[in-house]
Length: 397
Ligand code: XIL
Image 1 (cartoon, rainbow, N blue to C red):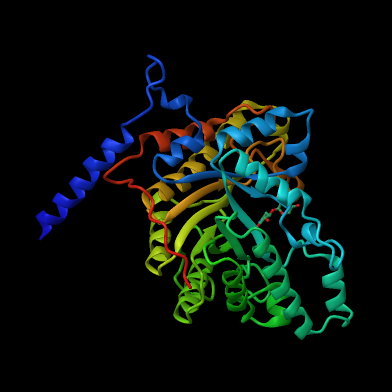
Image 2 (image 1 turned 120 degrees about the horizontal axis):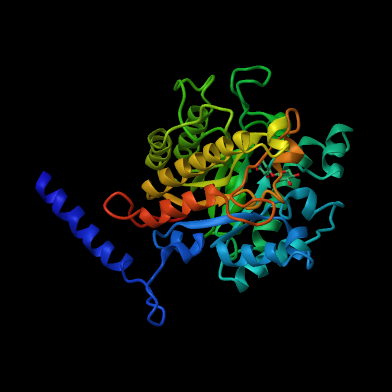
């Protein structure tokens, strides 16, 4: 029995090596994997390497580097803001599709897949909606209907064009919130109760039978105590198991992967374990918003290399931990960075006390940083029998 398993693994391994080693021989030049893009190297494992896209930067003709790297280096794109409700429907009933459509067209032209982000979230909601609820002019019943309509409208528009949708984002509290016992937090839980999660997935599925429907959150890279009262990963795990048991069409769990070098963080095996546990629930996994920020001390800001270098190294190590874990788990379909260059990262604007930055894989002048090279080496060195092609789930009905 044991022997037979080994034989079959070996057969798969040999077959896969044969495929992966069929590398394009470009006119006499030896194949140099370091010259390949992250996107191309990821696809050798069926893994899509993606980036969040800032539409203003993409359209800035004074800055062609941004567009060039977005098009060339990545297999997948996510709208950093353009598909959020406040961007899509700033005035009630008037959708502004321009930027979101433009990204979907850009992806098509460049043969990239699209991760749709995001249908239901408590942030970046239009003020007409939040004000209406606050002043009582929008009732709970009407709010639920507005959400159904929003999901249906957006998912229908991009039906067949979006590969994965972040259907619900950041629904769960953190241990530092009040009360500290983990709970469903924010606008939607407050006004509709936690039943909105199941509704949202069902509405999304009704509008697109083939898109992979994800729950997306941060601080779920690894398990902690195992107690859902304080372990967010466990809370999300129990939530996904509950949704699956109710037959809710959830196909994936997105782990955002916003890390910081000032924290302890996880080793590769801890992250693999978490991805595998989610996989055992019958869902795919993905890293959806990876960045690894650092505190910008006075020394860092003054250009002191003794303070900068350890941060760049720690950042690279953390990017690499998530990449290796993703490669090792066959359900991990994509690895998306939340912006690729420090020039356009959301980090300095959001984490300013103390100031943080240096969170991405290219510096402000679009030079690849250590993190870029390390995740590239992970992709190049990976192969059977430990790293095998991806297994994509059939969308749940
Ligand atoms: C951030 C964007 O990067 C910023 O430009 C915007 O001002 C705020 O939102 N988790 C998410 C993303 O799911 O949508 C957030 O994006 C970052 C945290």
